Image 1 (cartoon, rainbow, N blue to C red):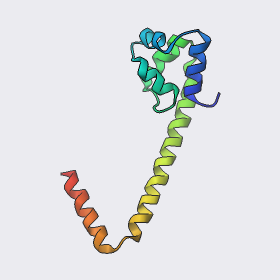
Image 2 (image 1 turned 60 degrees about the vertical axis):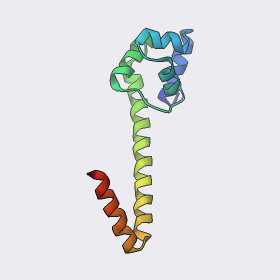
Image 3 (image 1 turned 135 degrees about the vertical axis):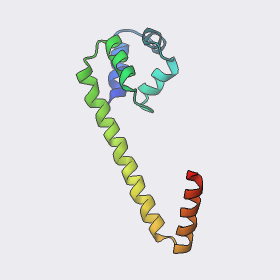
Length: 108
């Protein structure tokens, strides 16, 4: 298993729990379990601990998977930022100045 979402799904199914049963067991919504299992989001630390406790997953087994996914997300964001900076640098100076002004107005 290479992803946290797969670990959660496999352990839940291995215990013959529905998403709803797991959600009720740890006090979160069924839809959030679904979101975690398709990998649209990673759980926070407290939720991950509750999931691990409910599914008898050693926390040490789940944390590296979650960290690996978060690092991948950070790398994707860095790539997007680099592309945006490259595109910005290619714009005419007058447009760059206007975009900076707009950004400053939005910060207020």
